Image (cartoon, rainbow, N blue to C red; front, side, top):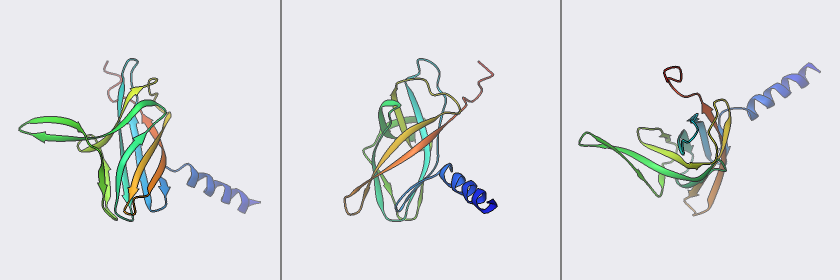
Length: 150
């Protein structure tokens, strides 16, 4: 009976872990920040590692009207954000998607994102054979920074 509980605990830990796997693709640390009423967008940060060369070609979420791939660039002392059509995923290299480079933008939020909740996100990844792999991730909603200093 004790072995059954240990196995059940291990299985639960694996299922509730912060990563998502689909074949050769691993997604880790998917997170966003809580939003305030009226805020229409949120940035999603995550890490993607693919065992084979691939390309992130899109994303979607039931929590927003759109999910777009963006990049932040710094040029002549100015930061600018622009949408990109795809993000290369070199084989066996971790691609960090953060506010300082590539990231996902959820736009047209259907409701405010609450700290402690999760948001479903589907990533569309094109493999070298042109097949599309869909990876479903639960994005953790973190508290707003400096919430006590309103």
